[in-house]
Image 1: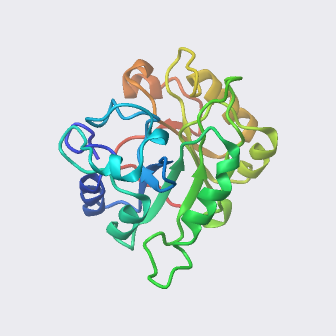
Image 2: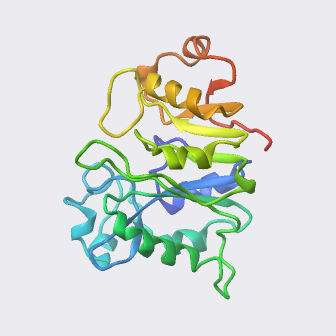
Length: 239
């Protein structure tokens, strides 16, 4: 959904996405000071809301008092999952530095699947995509199998540990970030993404989460090897 029309990670954007002919909706999740999981991409509030400071230092009450740039409230994970059409799959990106927090996320997210209320997380792919550590490396990506591991989705990474690469091998389709040609502290460059693709040997790869610095879509696409393409709005494929 166009970010210029709908603020990211809001119920309004999820509503619009649900109206489109798509199979899955992506959201980003962080933990606030009081322990609740809130739907936010950035570590801090400045870019997307009228608030300031790290999310980890704000209580849920404080976060609920804020608004996004277009006046939307910040949803919790539970509110978002309850709101989204249950027929849609949900991709949840966990934004965390602390590997010890993974158990907290696993318990909080997976409980929705066993809930008596039958939430809309139906066959959700849960990818733990974490921000860079002080050594400028990502902690290993964890993939919860979707479609019997025929599909892997990684949009925020600049490092994938060898043991995690083995989990990806055998996928038929890989979605991978390739932000730009120049180095970036938390995302693969185009060449780094291409080098990773060569190691993984997945038949079809789509690059996503790329910036305007990647160049014009058609011109850049013409330089990519067979089996690698730039993703685009409305892209559909069969697994």
